Amino acid sequence: MFDWKKPHTVDIKAYRDAIQGQNILGSDMSFANVFLLQNKYHTRIAFYEGFLFKKYFGSGARQGYSFPAGKGDPEKALELIMDEARELGERFRLAFVTEEEKTWLEEKYPGRFVFNNDPGDSDYIYLREALATLKGRKSSGKRNHISTFERSFDSCGLKALTAEEKGAALEVAEQWRRERADDSSIALEYEAIKTALENFEALELRGAVLYVEGKPAGMTIASQISRDVADIHFEKVLGEYAEKGGYAVINKLFAGTLDCRFINREEDINIPGLRKSKLSYRPEIILKKYGAAEVI
Image (tube, helix red, strand yellow):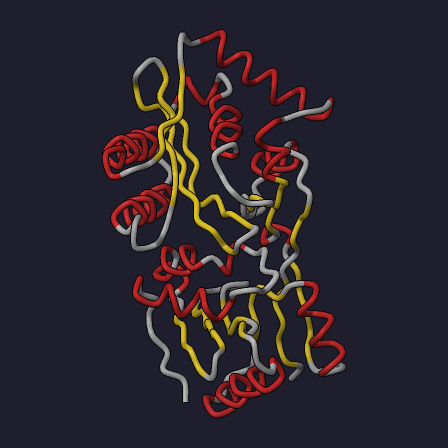
């Protein structure tokens, strides 16, 4: 029934058609994320009767099917993947279930599923305008970081990540990796950045390079999840520039270039420092995600 396959850049139109017009906020629904993380989570996708289906073969929260996305009958679509799981002799699992989907499942299938939630999987979603302006008392700390940065360096500016700037973005990524040579997980993220740059146009990505005193000092890459939501996939600032407020600078400047209502800055994966940083920007929404498994 399902023709499961690895995500490929040629699938982007069918993927976008399946989710078009739906109120999608989660970073796991970004095609760029699905493509860039397919080897990490062994992700497969399929299209059937107007629906997009995903299946994860990872561990923890990254295993099982995704909730079907499409414009038809979700109950019928869900039954199709439940049937497949039964035929394969697998316990039926769903990954990255939203609160809305959890409520729907509880109403349609009372007592049939158990749910778990890991706070580290929650997405931090912000109003674009709030990040671009940093107005108000609660953003004074970020404004102070930017002031420190501006006092420390003679000039800085953002350049759109065009074909001409890919080399500078990769240079930042390479130096960022060297600064963290003792962290084995950094190599995986560096490879994902390289893949993003190699497939930049095909994935319909956008990004920017932060220049400080004429030198590349930071880079960022994003994509559109939906018309109203942009997803920040990578944001890196080097050494002393990061220490003196560079992340606040690139965050604010890049937010000002985006055309969307919300910016999703993804999960904190239970890293305390990352969680503190994401909370400090005052998210408009913390999008919880659940794992669901059929009761045995």
